[in-house]
Image (cartoon, rainbow, N blue to C red):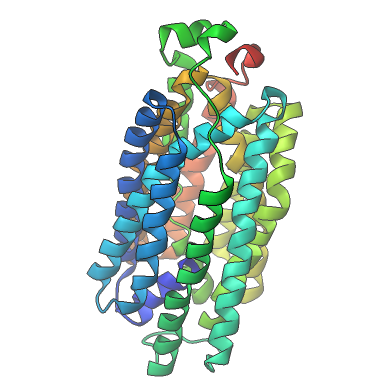
Length: 385
């Protein structure tokens, strides 16, 4: 409900520039990623991964709605960083718990289904936000520049109401999710588990992911670009819902496909598709192109979102999954801040097309390296589970 409206709220209500929006998103994600390493490492050392997950979701559910009370972009930055503290605490233990719970031959399916379920919620949320905006009389005509008081009031109401699904999510988590023991890998004969080391194959994969992420700035810029192309502010939640609908519709299938075809072909293909979409965003000139590109962009997520995590689980020992996902998420987060800052800097000085060409070019380089250098799925996956 909040995320698709946040860029236009920052720009149209609080007067933030593109570079500061990039700084907010980059700083928030970097904070999360640093904590993902610590929480993942810690969850390997204790019996319960669930405790980290509960606390992480609880923090996010409490602080996110207070975006409605902000009066400056700096206050939004503080809320986003606190929100991402919660994400940092929960993400790596959650990813490791998914690997602990899934059979090796269906690991891609498990991560793909998780991504699809997450994105299904991201379809419903923006649609609810859109209906609230319509009830407040925010029209579908294009709005640019500073927002009118009625529009600002409607946005703030959406932010307050986001507390409801946040509370429901925490309740479901407390009542339904259970831990799975993860301290018996050595008994399964996993030699890497006995040494407790992460292999060079894992670190090589991480370097390639880091490079790709340097060209993968926050999706907030896609929403700003769509508004430039003529998509009205009131339709931003619907556009975001279209993206997440495609992500949800393709995520399970993409993860399952990686179980049969292999992780590498799906990741390489997805990154090449990402580059094509960014090149197209650079030269688009009409609202319908923004809608089409958002839908195609969702296929990229369907191909890679679950597959990338499944590959991490494939190439690390079970007792080190928490810290491995911590390093994976840290690599993405370390690149997130410079990626968004560089993208915003190029946008402010050379225009949106130049920024999108930069992102597309780095994605192509990363795809080539992934095809040539990065590891595929480990043959002895069953032993590692």
